[in-house]
Image (cartoon, rainbow, N blue to C red; front, side, top):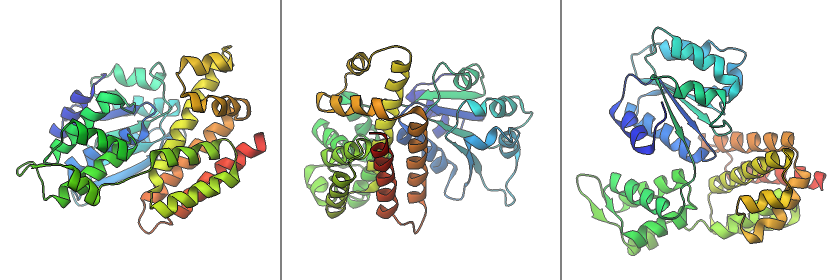
Length: 339
């Protein structure tokens, strides 16, 4: 079935046993992963997460149903997280939805899956699955999201504070949530002891991610300007900016270029495609250049590489900024070879 944010939140928070599969598709992968993390938090700190790559389900489609039916050795809660799911996962999903038993919920992160594709249609048609399209919130929708997440952590945020939270997180839901968690801890706030979030708290511990500076680094990488990228990365390092927003913004930009490239391949002119998507005027020229030298295969490889890098950054004792810098430079080198 198709679900809006309210329905998805209720199913996750209340533990709807009838739902054995959550398919989260759309370009906002960060938002999708935050939904998956929400499920993990509801299951508890001892819940075991089983990670599965979507590409591997084509060779072993029965694995998903097997994992969903398997009991933990020690009786702990389990859930399965499928990364980068796509049309290759259709057979695996068919087996999962048709299985006699599924005690462990499955979450599929499917950023490249289309709403009209087989995977999404299959899940929508099943009462045992819930499908939600993840798109980065903007404007008032983003401010409302910030207010809601703050309230869940015991913080009262007015319209101006909500807008500041959105701006400081670059609109990234996962970063926004982590910032609010940090602010709630700073103010000793919780749902049973709410506090008012104000500018003083934001000034004390709030993040300043330098959205414009991050955008400059992204543009340099995708445009193949390695020297400029090096300067931008150095500036971000001095400012203490987290590498996660950089990688995610770069992925979103490459996914947009991939979508535009598909329209151009279908016969639309580059200028028409750019105008149709209301590209920011300062990015029109670089977008047009990217459409001329980024091939579909290279776009897919770059997006996959950046996503793998982000997951590596989440691991303990990772190389952090070094990994992000290497991934960004790799993107710039690919672009430079195509110019």
